[in-house]
Length: 288
View 1 (cartoon, rainbow, N blue to C red):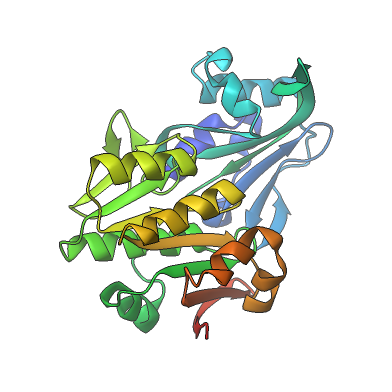
View 2: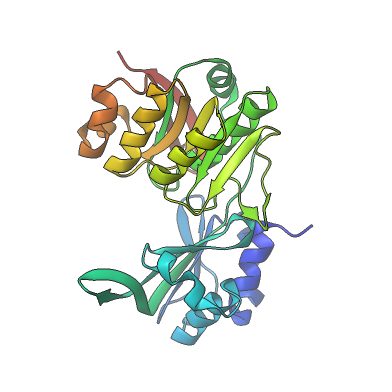
């Protein structure tokens, strides 16, 4: 059965794919930067794949494969810095902005891409996961970028849904469920409903109105609008489980965007994910 890794390899230029050895199957990301060597992120560190520099044509080839030669169809996503494709892959893009009427409408002259490879694991969180999934508290999962927040949130969704609790999933970047042609590619449990490729602040309201959820799951709260809709969901009696970028609770408290959530006591349980030499650990902190 084809995996997200297999699909990521398919997107690579043939010369880069041919240079992959067995150790690269543990890759979390493939990165291509024009004029530099291709690399893979493994255990938090980048390793060079081949000593042949990436060309702009190589990058164009990746995007052409990822969009089935329809780059215009993902133009709006490009303006957000990424595009989503099958198997839950997300491709981050860097380039020169295209401005129209004072607004960013897209990117041109793409200079680098990052193919992020999602992985599902049912062996993360341990006792903390069990405790969270049987509790009623709203939960915020934090770590620096690439720390495993999405993986842990996906497992929370699967376990909670498997207990018969209805979970509504706001999957703005198609990483949690990886819905492809209407079918989730990841196991998110039997009673989960997904809104994909819609901003979280809009998707959450749609799910609240239409799906009568008991839990709403949101990945990467990052804007005032996201915070407001999370607080609104809690006000409607719906449990919220979400993720955010922060290295620690003290780091979280310093970030202006999260002050509303903390001031209103939206989240009492904070899961801190730490990565030490590629090994993740999980710690539960309760806010007073």
